[in-house]
Length: 247
Image (cartoon, rainbow, N blue to C red; front, side):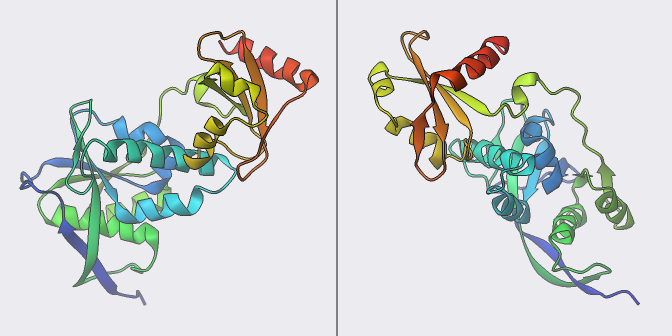
């Protein structure tokens, strides 16, 4: 027998009135993990991110895996958008669309899925938007989530990124520009910004170039916490060869 629990509804979608049947793409967590830049992949359209997606990204961001790296990048993209306006009310994107975070609460309406599961909470947010008169398209890499969406009467599509540039792959090193005086330090303080923004993980290398002279550089290795150490000449040879090939 199916277990019926409560369905969520929208608390607030934005400061302005929604146009009836206006198209909105709801992105599943796995889409952002697959491609953090998917936020910008729907030109001229509204893009909605259920709040539970942010919670899942926060859960994954500490992992030293591709999922962790892409979660951190998605969070950085959202933080950048936050600086341009309220994510709750909707931020205008350069492609002519908008992005907003969807907040939900429980309702007395019944649905045949377990409400405590995060995957289902995302679907219920999409369903609540549809019930409010929006033309909702649920985007997910999860086949079962798409099947559930269809069962709830929600239009759904897979997400596929057509092209991934070589620079978007994890390379094991990062290149930054620093004031030349910082290169005299065994552990430049300016490298800490990489730690605070989650842009680096343990054992990654940093090629630190002088801002005025790219031939003046040092290579550092990140050991976790706030510890960076200069790399010896032998390791430097292999890394610089890699950098040369990618430029």
